[in-house]
Image (cartoon, rainbow, N blue to C red; front, side, top):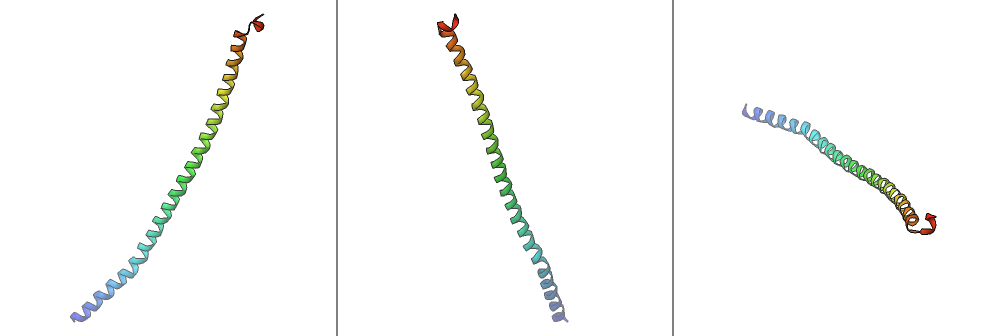
Length: 85
């Protein structure tokens, strides 16, 4: 009788291991995919930020240039006595 109980216990343990093992393996794959998705999202965010910085830099450069040209023209008019007449 004790041998029969031991065999049943071994059978039940092996059955549980065969059911649990694929679940654990699948969870690892899901975790790996989550990490890949996080990396891709980070890469896309960095690209988007870079594009925004580029656009803002261009806009700022052009605005500064326009203002500098205006200031230079006004200074020339104020300093040049021929233009005041």
